[in-house]
Image 1 (cartoon, rainbow, N blue to C red):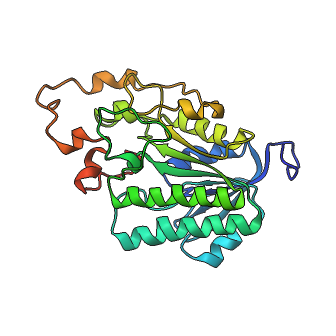
Image 2: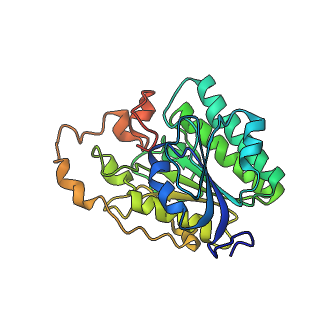
Length: 277
């Protein structure tokens, strides 16, 4: 239990970056159940705030602003940054410099737990015939994936050097429902995403952990056995959506690189709308 909570909630103040994004919006209302105060950050407007929320419009590439943002928080859920493949200079500011600034601020302010939104695109150039676990080699499928590899390595350094624990969430495809046949494998329901964040924040000791963000789907490319200590047990499945994508023999031929590799269209160098695909 937090020593800084006045209400008996697990945390006094949590920081959520990327609060205006798809997953940030899903998580935002739940965080109030876990903390007295929730500090929200994004580069765009955060809308109306609840009584327990603090809204901060912050560009994470601005070091001093991030230093102020992190002051007084006990744990960070870092969803901020660019979530599609993009020109390197854009990714450099948002995903590399921004993530560094956040960890350096966490170090200076004594924050000891970060939940980092990594991506399945860290391992996107593994073939679809493989089942990966937490120790699978990084094989990024895009510059976006490369920036998430950086984030995972940076968080490992800050754990080994400074003791800041991180759970890296290699998020699959988190939407209300799968949008294409690939997502029947990579689907992560919003409810399971929130549960995964809860496990990442509430588990007493996590060290530096890598977990694949995926629901209990009939087929899978990912195995979370090595991080079973987190207690994450998905409750949802893509099975209910299987009839949305009837099998097509022509489409099932494995000649297209986007079907040969786990990263899907990202291996072709074409952004497909969201990194959570």
